[in-house]
Length: 116
Length: 118
Image (cartoon, rainbow over all chains, first blue to last red; front, side):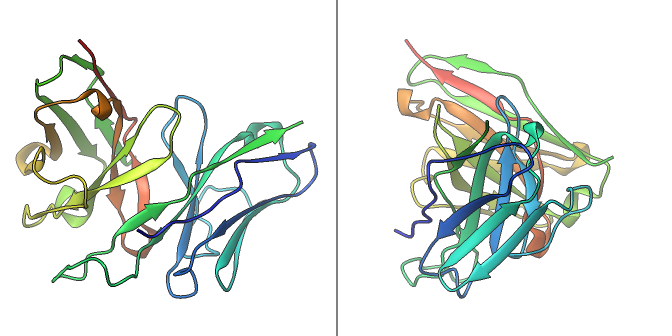
């Protein structure tokens, strides 16, 4: 089955730049999405289609893509950014027999961002 | 404002069934598909599948066939997830999420914790 791989943890000091990576063989062909989840809360979409930022998400959140790796960058990290971050993408392998071409969504294991 | 509001926590015995609701507000319910996702304790997300809110046609991900049923009541803008023959391994927080085209899951419910224990 298709997997997306993230580092378990990233730590940065306030004001520094945090970079969280996500790797997957299908990422050159499929968009990536990023979610922020704080303890006890539902996820919040922070980046979609590799680089787009939803309305209301601070400009310090950005996304980039290069080959099989996508990266979520948080510039000028603030204490409130401490959370778990998950990447998501579609499985474009041929293992799924879907006559209606339904996307199959896969998530990375998550990265705990700690603000020191 | 756009919201998805889910039903409250459930404690069930093994072998029982549970039905989780997800009520939409602030938008036309039948315009966007509803997806269901599971997050086991301390774990990441598993995508369970989705339901077409226009046709009612469900699609189940591998591993979520047989005991899992997605349904709708469009008259009250609500989607449902029913799980039968519950097992301890079904203990998780279940989320509904709106699929907004290429934006994917832009709105999430607050989650429903289902605990299966004897």
